[in-house]
Amino acid sequence: MKKLRLFNMMEHKTTIRQEMIAGVIGFLTVLYIIAVNSMILSEAGIPFQGAVIATILVSFIGCLLMGFWANAPIILVPGMGINALFTYTIVQSKGFTWQEALGIVFVSGIIFIIITITKLAKLLNTAIPQVLKDAISIGLGLFLMLIGLEKGGIVVRGGSSLIALGDLSDIKVLATIITFMVTIILYLRNVKGHFLISILFGTMLGFLFGLIPHHHNGAFSLGEYRLVFAELSFHKIQSFSFWVSVFSLTMVLVFETIGLAHSQTSLSGSPEKFKRVLQSNGISAMLSGVFGSSPTVAAVESTAAIQSGGRTGLTSIIAGCLFLSSILFIPYLKWIPDNAIAPILIIIGGLMTLNIRTMDLKDFSEAFPAILIIVMIPFTYSIADGIAIGFILYPLLKVSMGKAREVSLPLYVISCLFLINFILQSL
Image (cartoon, rainbow, N blue to C red):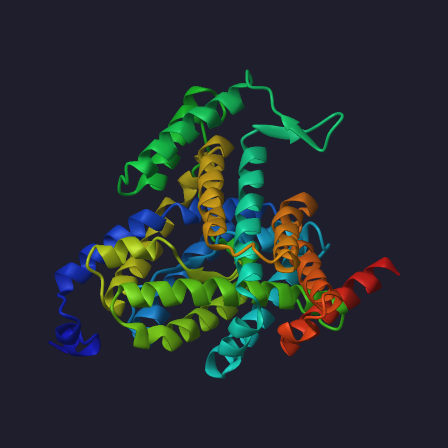
């Protein structure tokens, strides 16, 4: 009865059994994030096993926060797209070390918390035109698709062009294509745990094709995680580029989280939990920097848990505990080859581009900056630069058209900050 009172199960018309089933289903649908996020973080230089433990721990803690503070059936995990921003933009493009990038995550999390406990969330959400917010999501999607295509060898650096079609006779490319076909069919048929099944299939295929070693060292040690936990660095906190990266990360976090939290709290029938969901996510995002991961967001797969009957925080707590138990399988994650991960990145990226259906492109002065964001994020291999170019152009076109009043003051400030960053980089 205490559990019923703690989560208000009577009021939510649910049971412990129903919540447990929803938590297990939600966990199985998002379990793939452990392998995918860890591999992306490892490309930033974070030791792989350390990245795995960090991913598990921030997911566990995030789910507990969501369960006990927000009492919402929403699962928090490191966000796809945001992990790409962490690795490929902040570290590889901007030149920060992964330790400094974790410092950026921590500061961004603090700002996010401030935004969630004040009226800034509403202010930012209304100050940025919807067409630009949609463009960010679409650009992130195309970026993830490009990363997946590269990781699977389907596209390569071209001789007479930037990119070219890879060698379709290459065994790795064939394995990627076969795994992709299985993955997309499982997804379209709405098979529960589709991404997890596809990873298992891709790994088995990689094993048969000789893409992973037949004898693998299964030893597991916490030694690598000691090199990751609390290793965040603020060495460059006084630099302008540090704060531009903080700003870019916070922007993506805020817009993605607001959209997901709004849709999922409404779907679960508890829109009044929206603010606490945002606050839980903010605290979890900040702690991600301490534990060694890119920031957490509400998993899109939380919808599966909600549709399975999840109505309270017990759903997310069950999922969080299952994340913690998955630490036992860490030694086997190094078996997973690129051909098993690439198809998931391609499909998730494709899903993120679906926002293009809702974009209002009638006004070319608004449409063109949005299109530039979509194009420049993958073309520059930098999420921050792609966003910056669109945000600078938007007010310039509005002013040139005599529509300066249609641009909000916060957007003028944001555009100026991005412009100053470009000027400083060119000096």
